Length: 374
Image (cartoon, rainbow, N blue to C red; front, side, top):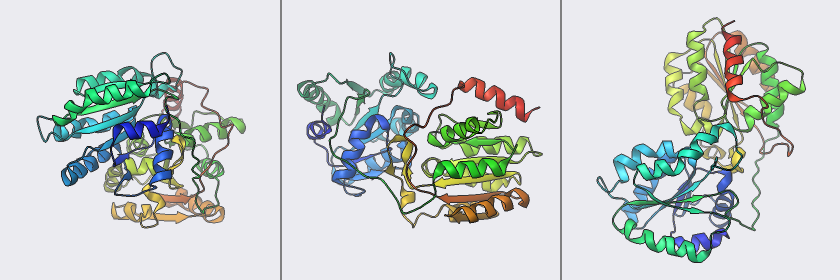
């Protein structure tokens, strides 16, 4: 189905959410039509954030907002869904569009398998009437579903369209880029080289995939790395938990700007604990690249990650955009003996043939634990 048909049938004029590869057609349409226009389209830091934005929009306009997300984001909306917008509380009508990663019967990555199984169950349990859009869904079927949803929305309740892989299409082209020169995969190589045999915790998406390939291509063991293949935004907290309990190890965290934004409160917890053996590297390309390249608010120069970290209590923070400064800062951080954050500005883009980890998530965890406890 053309995404334009979905938009017309929904009849909404405000969309907010977190980008998802399953919803790439919708995301690209929004960027093509509106860009980042706070009146019609806002990319949120996390899914709970987008539902709260939607609630504010409804109260200001009386209209029904749309929140889009990957199904992994359902966990982030449960609190505001139950305690804010629910019809037993403030009764704020909302339409959800949910990308169905890990849909039963389809092949997907390990972090999506269980989430895919419980996607509709969670919606049912939260009293969110839902309809699945597949490649075979017709416009008439979608109109009928929306007609069924109309009285539910009028009663101040929420509904959802769960989107199967390839169900939506958009013929337009959107070019996501920035002005930075560094290549992220090369940046990861520099960080891994500086870390040596120190443990590394890497964030979800292409950063972990590129770290895995760096080890493979250089004939190195994967035991040094914990690949956070799911739970976006939490790798820095995982690294903190390891650093506190392994004070004799230098623990590196390779984060992304989208992930750091998603749960930025983690920086306050890290800064208040000030683990002297933790180095937090945030690779910032201003994009949700793993799911398509849509921008994060870190593409706005007013959003200053090192300044945020400093305000949260990190003793040392810096931003670099070239390899000479990066190598200097990596070496200094390793020798400093104090919590450090290094933001690395890099370009949007990855190799077309970038692979995925060939070990299972459980094998990765067990090998990593054996190494850091050995």
